[in-house]
Image (cartoon, rainbow over all chains, first blue to last red; front, side, top):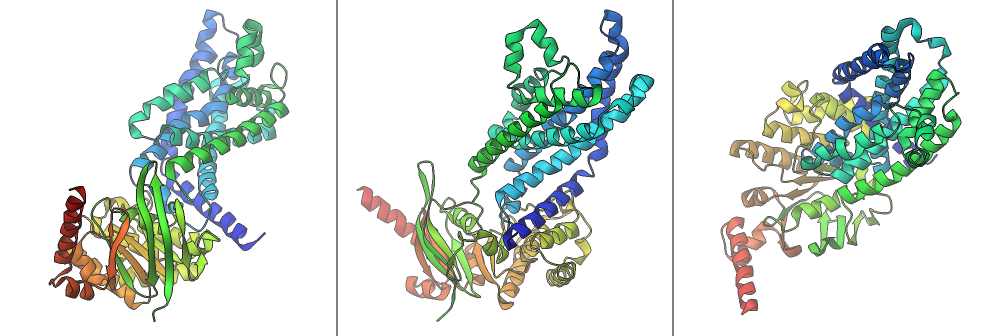
Length: 263
Length: 252
């Protein structure tokens, strides 16, 4: 490891620490926000909607979906923060003049978002246990697989946040983030259905949905929480998600370079 | 002969079809304060952003102590302190946290951070504000903290981009004293400003940029003598009028 690489690694951890110091003041508020949304969803889908003929275990299925996408919802705020920084204080400008590369700065930001997203995602398990109690068997969860896919999914979301923010660019267009990016990714990513289920109903649509990275996050998380049967192989999901994460990184870096014109 | 610290060689910057800098060549000497002047849109902030490595030039090179900064940009950044026009201290952190983190990014040890923090906070009279958040500070104090942050790692060159813009006159004067103290401590300063009194008071040399080109560069005394004017403001106005007349003649 040469001197510059050592410095870059060091600065990466310092920047990550800085971001976490900043976010700790907002963590409780973030937790409350996501819990409100999740409690409403889980109570309705776990205890109410069965009266309309839905399967009894659909609530647990939804819990896995919420674990998979808590970080995606958190992303809306992250994207808005990045866009407002472009227009306002431009703190990114300070970080980009530090003795590191732009990759170090951007990746540390994505990792900080991933840490927060992972925390929020995993906090859903406790909530799920409260809402479903004995219906949720914690011993049947593949914990390592769940942790690994949750971290990678949230890293993907963190990188995606920068790609979307750089693409959208201005405060006036923040409204586009939800309708044009987050909602379609989430809703067509299989929040309420597995890929196998949609394949039975409409195979062409199911094949189109293979291009949506959220599909693999949902399927991989369900494989870890609910068991491998009925879902994509966890390993396939990890492989596909790694490819999407790498692709998003290249897009995010490129878009950020165009937006910020950094060296 | 003064020793050259930074050599700017034929720097050009284009944004689409607009050419913000049209070939700027300039040497900055060790230990001097160089005032960079110009009307709005002259290219001052573009040039200082390129020197700060915030943006790349479209063409040209910058040498720091004889070596291109683009060969090892991280090493150059260790020698550079940049205080941008907009204060961008982190508002969620205390000022002490902002400064300590800044020192840590530049690989200072805890002892070095402690030492620099104590020295600079005393020098800039900021002790009472250290535990407050940036969001509660007035513009003048924010600016002082910005300068202190840019000095935490003891850089050889400091870029101050309009450090006194929108500040009250007495606060500006206080900052001038601090900038003069920087020069005394051996730091080279590139001061971007459109306050001509400020440039005259602080600069060893002034460089006037106009439409992306260097119009002239000299000491304030020589400029006043050449133009037979009493202050730099009159020199600047004469220079701009001369430029306007040239343009009208050219058009006719």
